[in-house]
Length: 234
Image 1 (cartoon, rainbow, N blue to C red):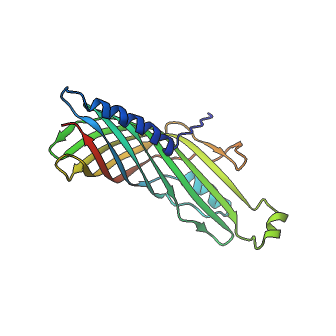
Image 2: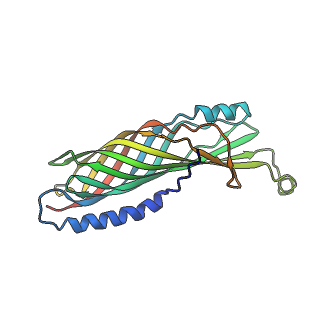
Image 3: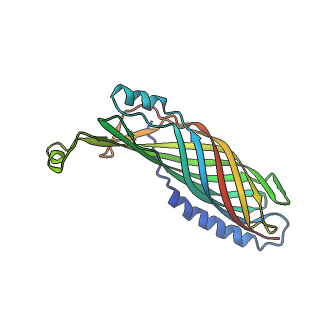
């Protein structure tokens, strides 16, 4: 099945901006409830399952990639009473792997549209389950280390390649924000959850042509620490 998802974290920021503007307008409402918005920056630690990919790399004498990912990014949400709407995006770059002959370089992005429900809002703590719908994009550069000079590269330019994988993801998590200010302006937050890929992903080569490849199982649990700035109606 062909699945191409082109959702990027910087595009999500535009969505977040408009959501926050809408939430800010709602914050002027005189009806009871929680109205406002928040934005945050932080990092997410994940354990991914790349066993199929690494098995293919090992059989072709290529360095295997790490399954431990530390991603950095941020997001924002609008609060309309108990409903939470927004998005988040994160990117990562893994340490290069070198086996003497080849080097693998890996980087990627996660981006999600979020829906949540505020189940607890007392004093300085806000707690909400969150659903994320989005995508993961991974880019792998494979380089031949035997290239020694410019002319050698020109004589045989096929000394490296780039692989790209795009995968639809769903994110189920719970987000908690502990506010350190009385007016709920600044908070330290924690989010834990699980990412699930319900559809088989697609590989493309350096020429953006679809190719067969091992399944990339991006399923896995994560823990996220973030720092939140917010504004809510009284």
